[in-house]
Amino acid sequence: MDPSAPSQTPDRPMTKSHGTVKSPGPSERKTIKVYMMELWSFIPYYIASLSASLRDESVEVILGSARYHLDRDYFRKTGLTPDTALLDLGGAIRSSRLRRFVKAFEYIANLFGLSLRFAASRPDVLHVQYLPFLEHGFPFEIWFMRWVRLLGVRVVYTVHNVTPQNAPDRYKHRYLSAYQATDALICHGNEARSQLIQDFSISPERIWVIPHGPLFAEKPDLSPRELRAKLGLQVEEPLVLCQGVISQYKGIPFLLDAWKRLVEEGTRARLLIAGTGDAHLLAEIRERVAADGIGASVDLWLRFISVEELPLLYQAADILVYPYKAGTTSGALLTGLNYGKAIVATKLPFFCEYLRDGENALLVAYDDKRGLAHALRFLIDEPQERARIAHARDCQNSARGSWSIIAKTTRICYERLLVNN
Image 1: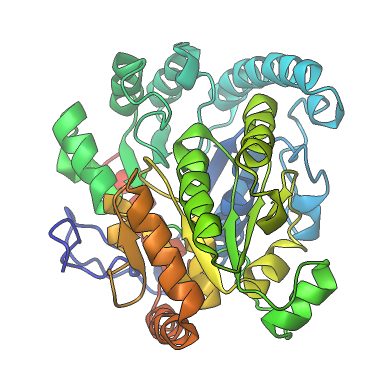
Image 2: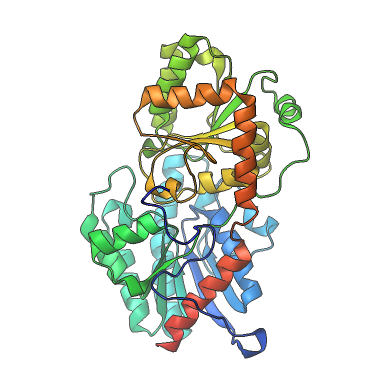
């Protein structure tokens, strides 16, 4: 086993510093009022799944989120209603520059409004999911959390990434201040927990390790070949999928280097890169594919992939690839785990909590272009090995933690804080 892998299975809720906690029965539990704050709506799928699951644990969730600008009706379709008192007009603006400007104004105004509202009517817990201005070195989100704590509200912050993945040392002092302004931190893996302890001197008792839940778990009832035909993709050749929000740390240039090697060696397969991101980065990817002469074997769906399309893409693929340079969690990986596909990924500590080289995935070092090309070629050429690894993935997934378990553990986190209040 990889030495960085946790002693507990990562697919179950882990409270490493808290021991085993038994939650009271339904008749004993009081309703906990939680304000789930993600005002930018950067991770709508995660907060929707968590908020919906918490309702079954006697947690009254107020969804403090703007509507997702790429799917304005998403929350409504999942049966959730965002806080109607929030300003939320910017997401409807088509111009990305103007949209970001208006959303930034609304974000700051909403923080100020919440500061006043909480002074008059306080939730039991403020659960913070994402602080977009922290990445740019601004302190006012930290001031807001400090103010909320002064009001007597417990503050929980889910640390999806310990530091910005594209610039981990930037504004590190701000992140330290943010972590110190909370009562508890939730992270999704033991690597993130270790970073919080070692790099930020956070007390282990304040950290809860609770896995990221599965997203888009329902598989389409069609074969990969049928789905590829439905999606207008090449049917006969194996399909390698790299899907997710595209950012520098996701390692797309590294993947394209390896793919160029495969093309030059005569390997017959298709690579599909699907997802949206910064316009300049998307343009660089298009230019790179054209310059390397690999466009005949690469499909670029560099756009928003809807929740209706995502399951189709994952089920259509034969191999999923995650060539990341960094990351302390990955919603894309945790989505891909649902589909029982062969996986090739880099040896990030977080990935190694879920993936075991040669057993349920093939793992390579980041920037090992030859190694990545070899791993992909092996699975492309050996359908039996693809099936073996896919079967291992399915067996592991049958024991994976559900949103129900995640919600139960999150409620226990809230309860602990409120008992000590």
